[in-house]
Image 1: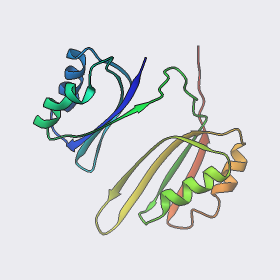
Image 2: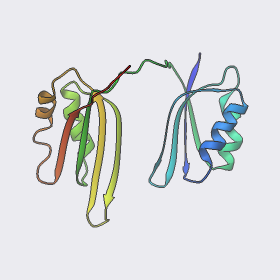
Image 3: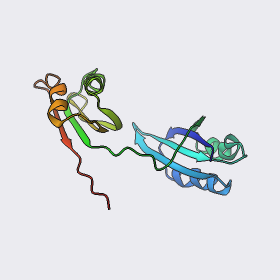
Length: 170
């Protein structure tokens, strides 16, 4: 199956998911993995789509235009059911400042931690913003080695926690 990665971004409004997926269904498309979320008042969609011989741009054009969504489509080499299951979760909470993501992910990468998912949010107030980040990933290193890689990044204003993810399959 030939897959394309389609991303859509636009102002969050009622019915985006329904209208986009219906247009794809009516066009005979198959959907693979998707990620959809609201970010800063915008709604973002990333989805693997197989449209067969039909031009995906044409199938989604009317809905994207009506909902004022920006569309980007790339051919990808996609495979389903090939997931690496995360075995560690990192949670970061603290005073918002530039460089938190780069510092934490850089330290994790140097210790062999592969980021599989990252979500972040800014809470608190405009005067005292609080950055919250959750990372799930995979590493063959020990919890102690990963914790050591993060030591020194926290300080008084940021709390970093790493914990194993217990996965029960079957």
